[in-house]
Length: 275
Image (cartoon, rainbow, N blue to C red; front, side, top):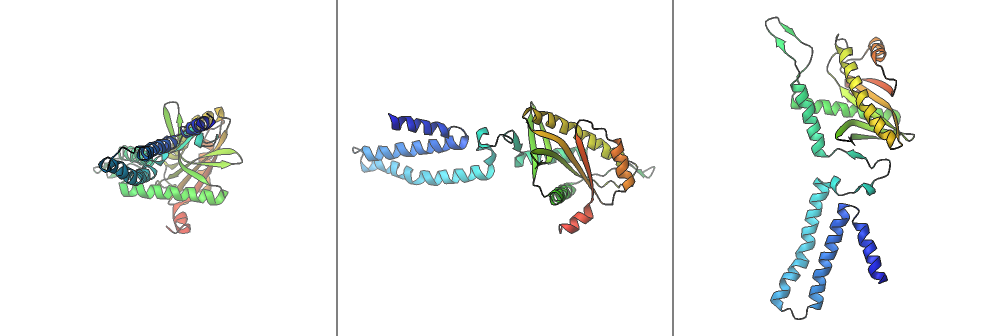
């Protein structure tokens, strides 16, 4: 009776996540097949052969299936109890979600109203981005995150998704500093800092990020986690002047959350990291 109870308790522990359920199923199935062979003395050779083949082939099939799960669907193998309390609700975006996010960004860029009036020989401010340019943008934004890591000596978790109600909020990075989460947005732009629209475009992006970060901050607050600081980092092909930096800071209104603006020259970052 005691051994049966212990077995039931052990089996119940396996049911806490999909990986445990798969393991429990494999153990039980393999155990029953072995018992059939051991205690079924009335089976003839022809009847035993299918069971023997099953015992031989089954582990190989399980190994192949397990490799496929680990490589392509690893994020689905764990339950909420497998994560720490302060991070169980933070989900790393899957490769499919990251690809979809990048495609959405690309579609938004490609559908932006950027036109060239050849008759007037004037071009509106903006740039159309191809898939090759999208890869460049993603790489450059990764360089920004690396530089922030170097400056702070802290690890940044990339492509973090917060599932809040029916909405998913994607952040470029989240950094933990003294038990406080810092929300990070990294942006690369080809708009020249000397352009008249640079300040307005950047301020609009910063305000959008502040709104998104405020939603995430409120959500984390309900989880007893502090996230009142954000970093908005932007890289340009030319140095941003102190005057432009000051103008952008003055135009930003954020009383509920602390914001740190960082400006980088992308050419210097590429040279530093050997890109």
